[in-house]
Image 1 (cartoon, helix red, strand yellow):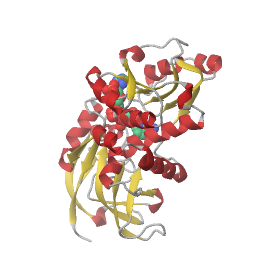
Image 2 (image 1 turned 180 degrees about the vertical axis):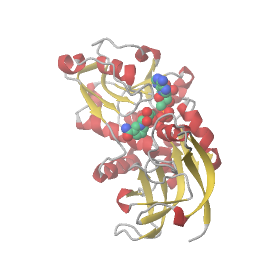
Image 3 (image 1 turned 135 degrees about the horizontal axis):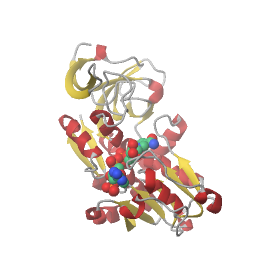
Length: 329
Ligand code: NDP
């Protein structure tokens, strides 16, 4: 196993300054795991941007191959569930943070972390969805479990033109929800409406300090932004509504009051994709394969080559990426 392949490696010097560069590696240098996968597609999520730029402490072991998700084909396995030739998807589990990740032609991981590529989906399509899109589905499922059905009223999606936001809009619209899309990019109005949004809410309406409660506007919300934005969304959620919180693009803080919870019975639903149990992952991917409109998926994603991931990482953290970025290996 001495075939050399390209990988991105993040290293840290003695002053704790980190840098990312392309290197050549062999399979022998990969970390422990019972399944080896030929990576066919990966993506650039916001978290990958944070890892590569070092803007947040995503990487917790150095050196590290970043990349939190991939789709590909099993080339070797000693795990009972997987054999050579199986098509698989990986999201999270610390891959790209504490375990060598997706930005390499090969990945060696625990077979427990993998889910099968759904029938009828290519590795590129699965990564057009990626961790952001699978998280959007986890948010939709959480709202449904809370009884937020389309007849209850509209659902607001924040960070709408980003990865989580774009997939969330397409999924919600496909399920018959009326969707309000909050964006800081008014130029993306046509894009968001094509995905299924019926109303555009300017980012500034939600990004300043929130009142304890405001006018009741939405039955539910999917928030990828956190901070004042989440506080405002909560304050404007209708009686008995719920907001699924998955992101922190504005900030990790939550400058809110308890008023929406104790006066309106609003619920805040926390969404984590990284350690989500396997049953939930399988359900999310089954529903994505069956329910996400392929034409909308194509419209919200663009494909880049592996060599461009470092530039893409800068762009996503700067808020310059629309929808999802797929990396073809
Ligand atoms: P993107 O960068 O694709 O989307 C984020 C969007 O947030 C941007 O497109 C922009 O939308 C909006 N935004 C960016 N900066 C700000 C700001 N300062 N104030 C308000 N809005 C802002 O990222 P992803 O979709 O990949 O991820 C979104 C968030 O979800 C991230 O915080 C990510 O870490 C988190 N996440 C969490 C997961 C979990 O398991 N909980 C899994 C996946 C993602 P617009 O231009 O429309 O305003």
